[in-house]
Length: 328
Ligand code: FAD
Image 1 (cartoon, rainbow, N blue to C red):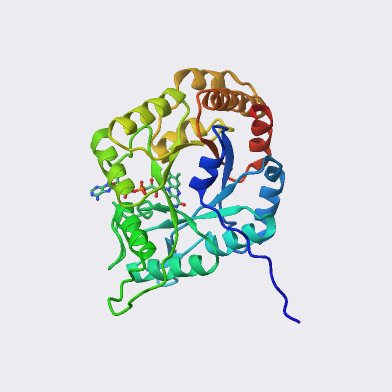
Image 2 (tube, rainbow, N blue to C red):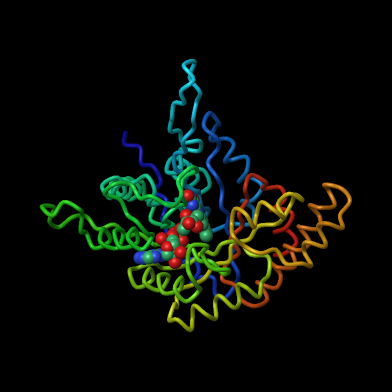
C-alpha cells in the first residue's frame, strides 16, 4: 500500500495579503528554543495564538556567538556556539503541525554563498517558499558586521542570490536548466532608520534596491509611536518603494525595557509611554500599562489600514494573546 502524505499547499505571504481584501491580518514571530530545549516549547508558545488564524509564522535565525573560557593555564579559549539552532526544522514542524506557512529568517552572517544556496535548496525541497532575507547583526566582540569569506555582505546581495535561484541560476555555471525555486522574499524596514545608515534617504535607497532585486514585502522594526510608521510608509512611497509594509509590534512588559529596547534596537520610546511605565507601582501595573499602549497602537494601525500586524512574541505568547483578543 502506498501511503500518500498530505502536501501542504504552500502559499506566499503576499498572496495572503492580496486575498485579505483590506482586512488587517495577524501574524507572529517566534524564537527557536535555547539549545537543549524541545520542539514542544514552540508548540506551547504557538498553541494559544493559533485561534487567531495567522496565515504565517516567522522563525528567527541566530548566528553563532563566541564565548571565552578561561583555561587552567590562565589562557582564554575562544569557542563558537549557536545558542538557538533549528530554524529550518522548526519551520517544517510548524507547517506540518498547524498547516500554516512558516517563514524562516535567513541571514548573511556565517553563511558563504554556497551555504546559502544549499540552505535555499533545502527549504525548497521542504515546500517552504517564504523567507525573510536579512544581513544579521555584528557578533558580540566584533566591532562591525563581518561577512563570511565568500558570503553575502548585505541583505541586498542575499535578495539577489535568491532572485537568481528563482530564475534557476545556481552558483555553479555548469548547471544548466536548474530547477527554479519560487521564494516570496520579505526584508526588514526601519521606521526610525537603521542605526548604521547615515540618513533615512540612504537607508531607503538600499531598501528600494532590495525591492528592485525581487523583495516582495517589508516587515518593520518595532516602534512605539505609530506616526513613525505612517511617516515611514509615506517616505517609502515617495522613494518608489511600492511593496506592502507590515508593522512589527511588541509591547513593553518590564520596566528595564525602557533602557534595553533603545539600546538593542536603536529606537525611541515616546515620553508619554515612559511616564505611564514610570507611574506604575508594581510589575503587574508596568505590564498592564505597556499592554494598554500596545492595544491603542494596534487599534489605530488597523483603523488606518495596516496590511497585517506582526507580533514579536519573544517568549511571552500569553501577553500577546491578551492584546490580540482586545484588538480584533
Ligand atoms: P541591510 O539591508 O544589509 O542593511 C544594513 C545597513 O547597510 C543599513 O544601514 C543599510 O542602509 C546599509 N546598506 C544596505 N545595503 C547596502 C549596500 N549595498 N551598500 C552599502 N550600504 C548598504 N537578525 C538576526 O540575526 N536574525 C533574525 O532572525 C533577525 N530578524 C529580524 C526581523 C526583522 C523584522 C528586523 C527588522 C530585523 C531582524 N534582524 C534579525 C536584525 C537585522 O539582521 C539587523 O537589523 C541588521 O543590522 C540589518 O539587517 P538588514 O537586513 O536590514 O541589513
